[in-house]
View (tube, rainbow, N blue to C red):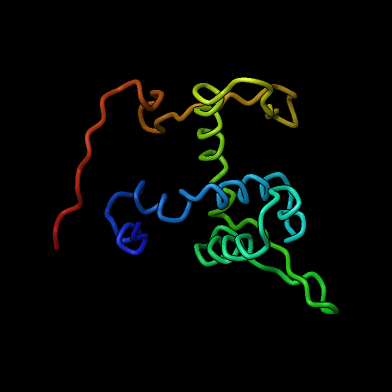
Length: 147
């Protein structure tokens, strides 16, 4: 797959999956939202090869979802923190999880709860303008005007 061509595609879905379509990137973002920030924490949580983790962290940093911050000078150590773009990705993860719970469920699954209310989070995508649940109304795709 040529991600260079996809990342310049006028479709925002295509542009997003050019980097976020990778399972490791999604799982790193999931773990970052759970509070993990350090290389060894991600490696332990994901049981991922260090070389793969290094590449994915670099990609997420380059794409602006994570930023590196040095937390130790001797030895030099860095942690990975969510940026605004990374924090804004959380609803995407929850929608993917809701789809997975419905269509890939079975067995015991992790549950997510609102820390303040204690209620389980049940993610749905809502159109901000109409208030309608996305997927309940027909959609129309409009390509951008040619220059």
